[in-house]
Amino acid sequence: MKFHRMIALSLRHLYLIKGSLPRILDLIYWPTIQIILWGFISKFFTMHSDYYNHTVGIILSAAILYDFLFRSSISFNMLFLEEIWSRNFTNLFVSPLKVSEIITALTFTALLRTLIGIVPAIILASPLFGVSLFDLGSALFFLLLSLYFFGITLGLFVTSGLLRYGPAFENIAWSSLFLLAPLGCIYYPLSILPDWLQVLAKMLPLVYIFEEVRSILVNNVVDYSNIITALQLNMVYFVAGIVLFYFAFYGARKKGTLINVGE
Image 1 (cartoon, rainbow, N blue to C red):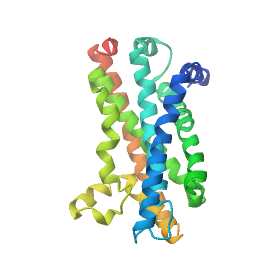
Image 2 (image 1 turned 180 degrees about the vertical axis):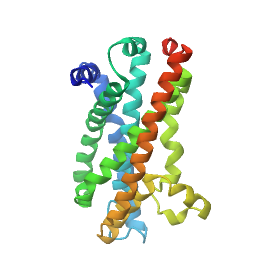
Image 3 (image 1 turned 30 degrees about the vertical axis):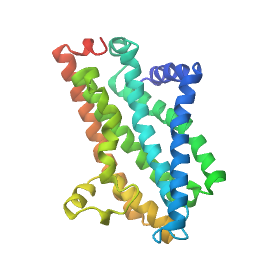
Image 4 (image 1 turned 45 degrees about the vertical axis):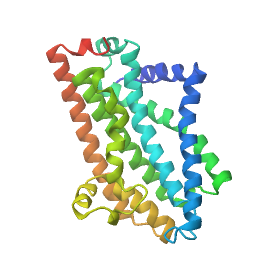
C-alpha cells in the first residue's frame, strides 16, 4: 500500500473543495439548517414534554450525531460519484491505485468533508441552544467513531451497487440511511417499536449508540456494554462492506462493465 498514491487521491478531492466556494457552502449549509431546525424542536419539547423535562438537548444531541452519520455516509458516496460525474472513473481504476488504497483514501477524505460541514453546526448549537456534545463526556469519542464506521460501511454498500449497476443506483446513495433511520431509534427509545421490529433494530449499531446517548444525558450513566456492542456490530458490517466492494469490483471488471460506469 503506497501512501503517496492515497494522499494524491485525497488531495484531488480536497483541492476541488478548496477551489470552490459553492462546494464549501453546500457542505456547511445543510448541517447548519438541520441543527437550527432541530434546536427549536428540541427547545419546544423540553418545555412541553415530561419525558424531556429538565433535560435540555436530548433531541438536538441526537440530531447532531445523526447528521454526523449522514454526512459520513454521503461524503463517501459523493467522492465516488464525483469520479463518475467527471468521467474520471475509468482513469481511477486503470491507474496503479489498488482497491484498498482507493477505499482508504476515500475513507480519510470523507472524514474531512464531514468535519467541514458538521463542526460549524456543532459550534452554533452551544450559543443558540445551550447544547454541547461534550456533555456526553469521554464516551463521545467512541460514539462518533462508531457512527463514522457505520456511515463509511453504508458508503461501501452503495458504491458496490454503483459498481454493479452503474449510475442508475445513484438514488440509493441518498436514501439508504433514511431507510434505516426508523429502526435506528434516533429520536425515540427502542421500546416504542413493535416487538418484531425490535428484533431487527437490535441488529443495527445505531440502536445501541442512540440508546446510550439518551442514557448518558438523562441518567448521567455510561454503559460501555452498549458502546462495545455497537463497535462490534460495526466491525462486522465494515468487513462485509469491504468484501462486497471487492466482489462488485472484480465482478464488474470480469463482465467488462467497469469501463462503462460514468459513460
